[in-house]
Length: 170
View 1 (tube, one colour):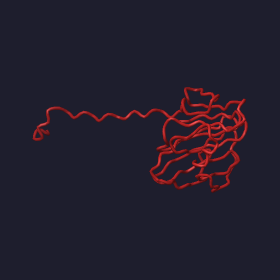
View 2 (cartoon, rainbow, N blue to C red; view 1 turned 120 degrees about the horizontal axis):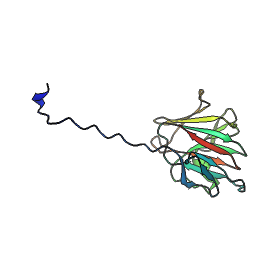
View 3 (tube, rainbow, N blue to C red; view 1 turned 180 degrees about the vertical axis):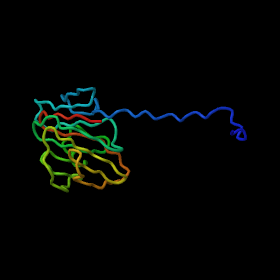
View 4 (cartoon, rainbow, N blue to C red; view 1 turned 30 degrees about the vertical axis):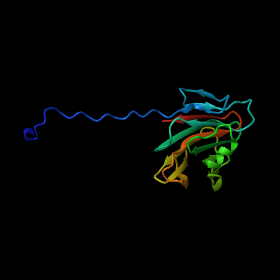
């Protein structure tokens, strides 16, 4: 039927890119933190009194969901630019964060006070062209923050004092 095009064979389908599932990075977390569940869960070290941090393997390009499995101490669920220093507490000033007490920060500036986080809560972070959204338990968006620079990569991270535990969903 399409002989006039003189096609010898059917064109090959383009390869489908393989997207590696997001997990906590086994190289980018504070010493003593425990990775379980094929890298999907991370728990803080009980014997460490300072802030601990863990970053995800891939930057956020769409939606990222993390469940708060247990709460033992203060914690923050955040988005960080690449190259976070997991041993430095000042790394938080570069992040877009939802703190356990309900305070939402845009790079160290408080932008909202919403529901405090507790065990069982699911925090969803969505990346748009120039913004990030936070929502709680698949509900309405609770915070919108504009990203500067708009094209900058942001990695999901958690900060904690104590032995809280978090699991990446999806």
